[in-house]
Length: 269
Image (cartoon, rainbow, N blue to C red; front, side, top):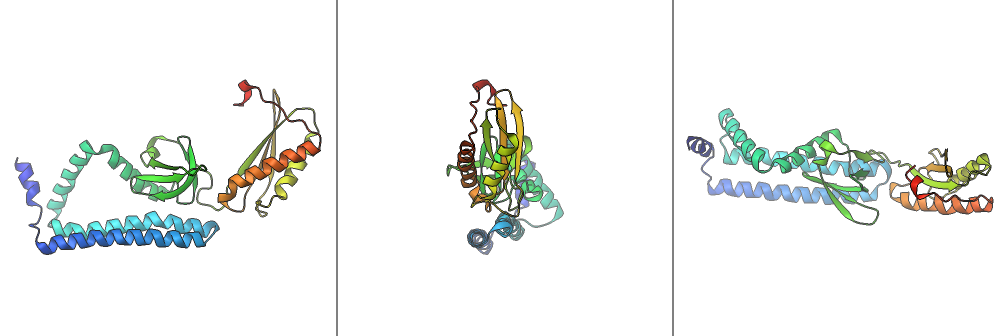
């Protein structure tokens, strides 16, 4: 009972002016966050490459700075900012949050860690727990990605603690695409490799400054070719893979190369 009274005593008697100040601070913070997100998102869409990614990555950082500044302004309005009062307030908040909102707070903390370690940024293409898509927004609790099927997936930052996070471009403007080809083993491998290499070089989506690689591996059912190249823009990756696949298959057929049929038990290999 005494603890409750002690905690209650650390709060100021809120005057009408203090209440209005708190409301104005909260409203101003919300407006700044909304305007900042909209403005930076608009500017990012006008840019391309790494500049677009840098602009998108600044959105969650701006939001965090606004929230921290708002809390700094609000706390003196409701609490006498002495060391004893702050320790008592933080202790009470820790008990409440620790018991009642453990997972939510863990996601918030993971969100702050994500802003520091940067495992993903807006504009990155990531895969978490089987969900793959472009990072559209990083909130305080969760990250939103949009899949190639235009489905929004909300992933709590809590996954950062115990899940593998695959980042295809890691904040950069380049993303490696892979087109797979499965052929019967009776063929001229060098000829096929050169043909697939030429397919990538002549694609309208190909980024000419980046290298092309053709990887070959033998399987019990035939030969597996992996054509690796980079598109001009990250958002073109699926069009690029489709173009490589269609034109690569047509090129192989013209060469008289037979495509292999993969047995069901071997598909994972």
